[in-house]
Length: 108
Image (cartoon, rainbow, N blue to C red; front, side, top):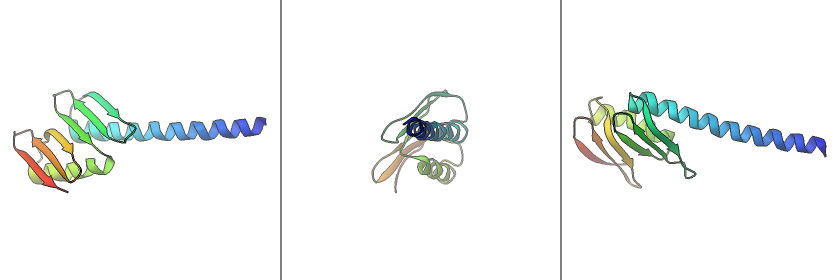
């Protein structure tokens, strides 16, 4: 009985720590790659959606880590590397505004 309790506790701790690690990785990616300033608000919901408000007022809502990678590509292609003031991922497209006030809707 004692061994099974130790095993259950160990599995539970490992499961919790991996979700904390994933959230920390997402936070760091958003902080360095998207905000380029301090993060004012960061959350990752049970649905996996990452919601962020940067210190400069820009905000992002992305479904997962892969979207952050897509955002980096879009930043270079559409915003000339200046970054976003807003970015949202929809079912079939991305909608965003570059920091130079140019707005786009791009199909996935």
